[in-house]
Length: 91
Image (cartoon, rainbow, N blue to C red; front, top):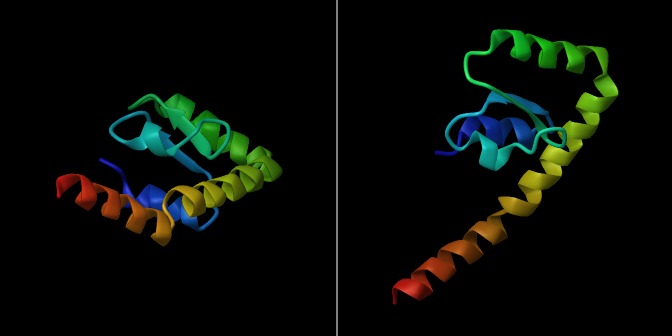
């Protein structure tokens, strides 16, 4: 499923580093809204974390894109519209 923690971090304007499992690849666009690493690959995780520390402007830019992504894909109006579409199909 989709991680609420990732959604909340993105909504706060943070780039997200997550493992490439479950619904994470559906939320994170590598190099745009954060980075995905293979599950249990602690070396790559450390490398990505270090790159954000060394390049705060990149982290900030990706955080802004993450926030914009959440606002466009998960806004209240968009969610309501999707629910209405599901209900109309069911009826």
